[in-house]
Length: 59
Image (cartoon, one colour):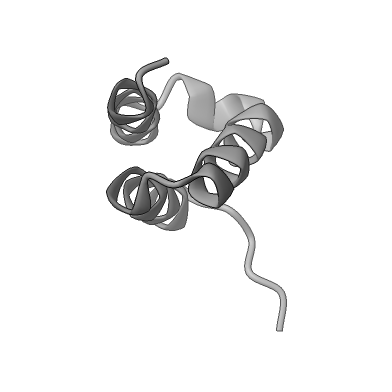
């Protein structure tokens, strides 16, 4: 089964990375952000989750 990215699973993954806040989570979160489809970059839910994650990483 292949899961397509949407605002809900991306937000959940960003939040999980922020909560874990270790080197592996930082790497994974930043990779997800880099590969995030363009149409989700302007989505308030997804963008807020990504910003929160980066703030918790100290970036």
